[in-house]
Image 1 (cartoon, helix red, strand yellow):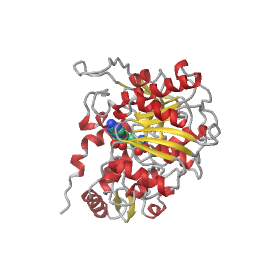
Image 2 (cartoon, helix red, strand yellow):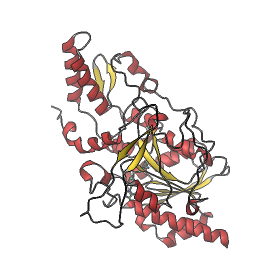
Image 3 (cartoon, rainbow, N blue to C red):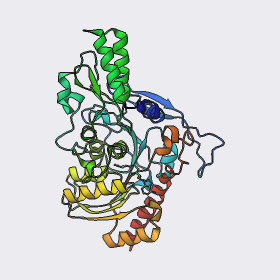
Image 4 (spheres, rainbow, N blue to C red):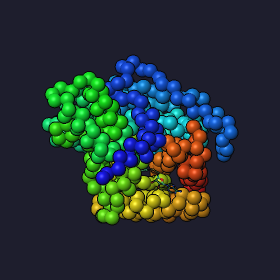
Length: 405
Ligand code: SAH
């Protein structure tokens, strides 16, 4: 008999993911408002950096410096002197990350918070610190579908009128158990006809919590991997990587990934700047959300230096690189800590420098049971943020010296 374990094992991570989903265009106030999240670290926690993060105000709606089809649009911003100009950088993390500390280590650039549900059919609230231009951004074509039923048209036949969801919640690693699907079906079948309010409430709560979709009469099930790939802006089977990768591994990698359409919207400004292609330093590459965004924007990747620890993810990226007939050079490193200053300088001389450093450092220590402290850049994984900063500083400093000589 299948074990109903997902409900229990997942609680920590799920609580975290749910915390991360606290606004959506459908439930946010129309007026600009702010939600306060407290990022104070525990006083006893060991910390490599003194973090005095003040409560940060998260914007509601979480539409950053502008999202397509929204009226609130910023087309200019003033970046701190040290952050201006190329090489560009683009850093991503979850909204609960200690953004004041992150920002302080990235030349004091303020994070841009965006919920991907403004761009696609699934929520994903993330902060992005970058020095990219922001005017004339555009969506990759064809534009992502906006509602669950547009992405998954077959669900239309079975979707109850009282389930008014049009967007899914943030995609996360854990899936609901088959027993939950059975419990929901039994509850609805017992009602015969329109279910009582209490049952509807229970079912909707479970559907929202576990991102369930309707695939048959009274049958609400978790998303399949290929459906998640589509929602995240990848072609289906992207994470199959040529085979041999388990469903659990594919789910895990997808749940850590960039939402490609959101990223591409931000990176689209690079297209006119680099008509001949771009040299990318891709830190914590994962399944290649950054590379996929550039590919879908048709910005040629002359060079990608990819730094990624996981064999599974490396396999997926290599498979993507081959399948899409990339003409550029892919160079792989395993551990970001091996990327010494000498190696970075050598690579930059070889290719004439990097045009952008993209990365979303691991956030495992910011999540649920793995959480080290509430503001937790201290966990072994989350410490990788400081590696991003170290590498970026070397790249920007070396670029300056190369320009001078
Ligand atoms: N943005 C990526 C995912 C980032 S998740 C995407 O689009 O898929 C963080 C990634 O960092 C994970 O894939 C993890 O394997 C990798 N990682 C963790 N520690 C690392 C290290 N020391 N060096 C390189 N990569 C590392």
